[in-house]
Amino acid sequence: MPLNIEDLRKARQALAQFRSAALSPHHERYSFPFFAGSYFAYRKVDVERVAAVARAISGNPSYLDVGCGYGDFLKRVREFLPNAEGIEKDGRIFYELGIEKPADIRIADAHWIDSRYDLMFVGWMEPGQDFRDPVARSTDVIITTLDQGISLAAEFDGHGFSRVAWWRTPSWEDVNIEIMNRHYTKMPDGRRAELAKMRGTHNLWYVYSRPQKVGIVKEALKKQLEIEPAGRYDFESELDECGYGYLQKLENPSAPEPMWQVQFS
Ligand SMILES: C[S@@+](CC[C@H](N)C(=O)[O-])C[C@H]1O[C@@H](n2cnc3c(N)ncnc32)[C@H](O)[C@@H]1O
Image (tube, rainbow, N blue to C red; front, side):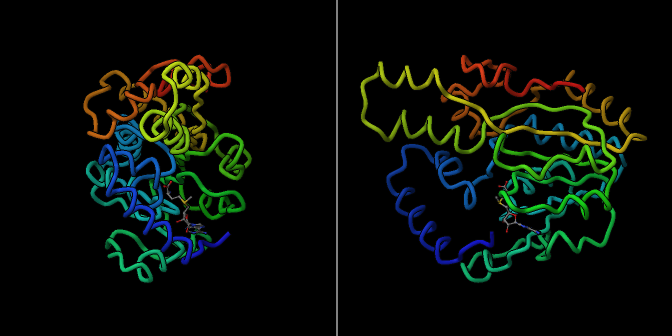
């Protein structure tokens, strides 16, 4: 479904209002993910894993973030892969809202991707979008994040790719619910603690490769795991506080694996 610019304008006003009373400068990235963060919650380890895989494919890797929005994740990736680029279909999110478009984001539809990339990243696509064919044609390695049960067209197994590894992190919504319960809703402490036990974590990261590169990708991830966590972003404190710690396990049986723990296929 195309973005509704009028809704985005209203959301921006709501963001300005939220900002004026926010209890932390980091809350907005989980409450207004399109403008201030990303739909998937990430840590520096996620960026480093993606960069490590790209570097294993090429010494000077080409990288495309498909449907990158305003490019929050892309900006972090560019700290490691300076040539990384994004593609975003809807130029109105910049031009009609008076937001400067970064030079590394190209306004185009993913269906018309015309180059090959060492690694393509597809982060949390809304239901109904399916550009697996053009993405699969344009790379040998894909990393995708999807919201469990919502983003259905993000799996590349049927497109000549093997899933090499996966891990789980919270979606923006998982974190936002916790932030709202903890900081912006009046309720007894006991109730809050009860609700926290039910917290879920619905974002899955899938690493796909063409069969001939599976070994390289797996090795790169294994090597990366030996040295992490090497660093962190300041906003990770919100994840820790909300009970979404690195390698923490939730009580909720719907998420049995510790978050951020890489599972090899
Ligand atoms: C749910 S947002 C996710 C943005 C960002 N990847 C994230 O996770 O925060 C999806 C974005 O993909 C863009 N998009 C949807 N279909 C696209 C297509 N065919 N080609 C390029 N971008 C597309 C939308 O305009 C929107 O900005």
